[in-house]
Amino acid sequence: MSELVMTTDRERPFDPPDRIAGLGGEAPLHRLTFADGHEGWLVTGYTAARAILADPRFSNRPEFTHPTIPARAEVAEKLRGREFAVPGFFLRMDAPEHTRYRKLLTGQFTVRRMKQLEPRVEEITHARLDALAAAGRPADLVEHFALPIPSLVICELLGVPYEDRERFQSYSRALLALESGADEVIDAMRSMTGYLYDLIQRKRAEPQDDLISGLVQGGELADDELTGVAFLLLVAGHETTANMLGLGTYALLRNPDQLAAMRDDPSVVDNGVEELLRYLTIIHIGPIRSALEDVEVEGVMVRKGQSVAFSLPVVNRDPARFPGGDSLDLARPAGGHLTFGHGIHQCLGQQLARIEMRIGFPALLRRFPGLRLAVPPEEVPMRTDMSIYGVHRLPVTW
Image 1 (cartoon, rainbow, N blue to C red):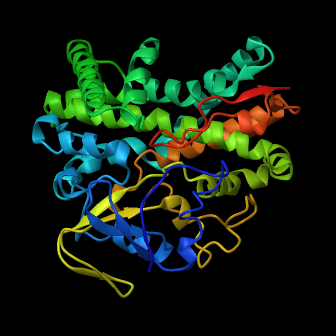
Image 2 (cartoon, rainbow, N blue to C red; image 1 turned 120 degrees about the horizontal axis):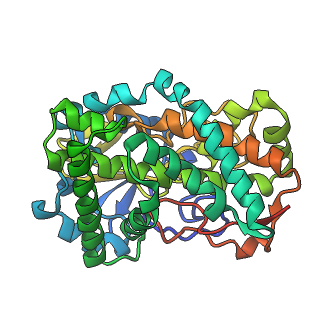
């Protein structure tokens, strides 16, 4: 087993960093030195990752975990104090606390409920294609298509005014930027929670037909808890799918045969979206868990108190689970990838994300059959400086 230090630098835009690429085929866990000097583990094997993510002996609480990269060490240290905790932010909770919040939301994100949103997602998608065409050539696909679609959808679902997007998107960028200092992150957290707390007061006074109003009227959560829930859903609901739409389009443009399949063959679309999710794996740092007791994982003893980080981009290319996984193949059976996580923390909004991509990719490629990059590939700015990977901009023409 090798010992290594994590990096976000990539030699190729769609592949994990060379330093860790391929480790999934060597061993399931590798000794990892965390940014604060903690000695723990990096998980790169698919079977090990799936087992740990489902194991309640590994905690997701932030006070038990350690930062993987130096840029986040100061942030992690300051946020370790409970004074900066966000009540209701159930992503970083264990059962039974996590279970309480999750149960309140599960009914809002069922497959049936998400299917009912499809006509509205189609309307929004085609409106954004009109906006992209109106912008003229060249245009930034992120600005006119990839970011607005999930932002509009999650705003309508939650009841967040879309006209406030520049405000909450700026807070989100500060939270996700790896170079943001601790004070910047804390300021962004306070600004976002303040904005959402005020919104919840308005919903309490004048409830509407949206998810936040429904939670307010349900009466089971205090206002600070409602704020934390809304915080998580708003950030996760637009950042992840926006980056998949942007990076996924870039990957298809660099693989013309796969682009043609996505555009021309409706039978490819559903599995093609799963393959893009697996191949690109935009959650490129973490998640992180910490052992609450000694746990043996595939012959490796993880000691109580040790943190375990996951390289999901490597996990999703483990040759034992996805043979030939370093290539993009929309016909590959890609189900079972861990891009949305696994276990109790598996992404709540994954079906909504799938719908947005299943509608978005084919609609874009059919509307603009001559879509191509407007700059050389090496000039596309990649989000190696963000905790969610993707492209900052994608200049295209047609």
